[in-house]
Length: 209
Image (cartoon, rainbow, N blue to C red):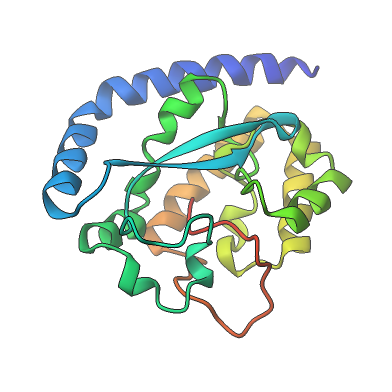
């Protein structure tokens, strides 16, 4: 194990705890708005793959109707606007729907920075990541691939970027990704809602950081 990995785990937990303490009012407000504006639970749980392909349930604020097809990537839906709630559109655009993943970080299932956790049925991406050992580390709230294209990237390119991060993982790399993520979220770079005619994997993850 690289020395930085131990430091990274400590930083992840500490920063996630600080984030939870500072952001709990936003959690409360967002939860209340979701509950008052649409039917269904406040949180959305979805099976993903973590370190060494161990399964876990990622947490997000629910942004879609309860009758949305399960385990279907949002950008592969033919009419995503039909399923996304009005509040959900804002949460997704600002990436506030990702905030509950702080809980996943506190539980040790995720890191702040790392490859985005693949859907359990995203077989093509999982196989590609195996080539670069990108499945051997914890997935992240944000990652190198996300600030270099997000949903616009083909699976092989995304996996290669995840592999590059795995090889170069360091505090400097994490800090760079974190800062660039803020920029990416502000500009909504690489976010795509709805199916397109471009070649995309049927297992690609939905819109996320």
